[in-house]
Length: 250
Length: 250
Image (cartoon, rainbow over all chains, first blue to last red):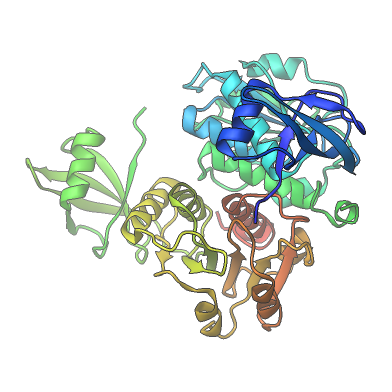
């Protein structure tokens, strides 16, 4: 059994048009996945839904896919941001992959008082996010922001978007109570601190912002990357894609 | 700031007794963590709660910790098993670490029809589970079973223990509805299939077992290891350690 490959492309997708493969896509399809002329490929671009196409031309270093039919219309995905303190390479790659699988619309790495890692290769993260999106079946690829200081992100916070702060001091309401109150249709966000936790001044500052709600999973016992996945999972289960209301749309 | 090291030991722990370091513990404390005579260490053994101790004797290849006082009593932790189809090395290490952080009491790797990986180094998994338990503050180390065939595990299923099947066919109730009905006090379990999903005969077999409840996160879009973490997180949020009832005990 050969499973269908999903490719994210930037081209417009509609019946009958042809999509030129980039060098990387060509290499991936031919040399990694051993696809041949006539093989089917699934494509999406974040705007036009999901399409079935066929490898129509395949040369040594180039190739073209002809678009055959639409498989799914573009749906409205949850508008959920993940604001997370920068992490070392292994954990930040992990958060990027899992957050993409879990339907985050934007990843915002931030620098906090206790953040150890201040540099990141954004191109690597973008590639991880794209591959996770291709693999998991979503119709968009999450955006990834340049790292900014936490205060900078919060002081430019968009009107109407909420922010759930995973509060390691244990002060917030239980996470399930908080998430059950979120709405998937309004823009929302989750905020995760660094390994050493937020500084108390950072926590105080955030708690006084009108758009912030604190959620607790008791004393902080989880690694930062685990906490991020946990918060996203509980959000999706109680307010997002996995609620009864959303599942009927599948 | 030096954070306290937590060590899992097999010795009985009580006031005033001395604990001889194993060679590995000695190496870890002295050479990895640069601890010195008189430094404090936190110990737990899965039975006697958590204790503060002090490095009382430190020789070239051996050492002893004297136990000073109890920090926490042994509490009753959630009795939650994770039954999961065997995975390759990276993902199975990941599941072991995260499931330990997320409070699983036992990990049961199983072989299913579509399982690719049939071998695993149990000693490596036990070490990962122990280190995750030390790091995350729990008072036990999860057990890890020898791999067995799925049917073998299910046909010897203990009376009274539930099993939530994460059903990738989308047939179950939404995961939050299922998890909100679980009780943290009764033994419970979560079952996750292999990358390619369960075979339809396996799904049919499981759904007909009285102790099995199917839960859905829609179409299967998550990698197996992500699905495992998601299910554990939602269980802990709605039925386990992070519910209001449990958080008051902190």
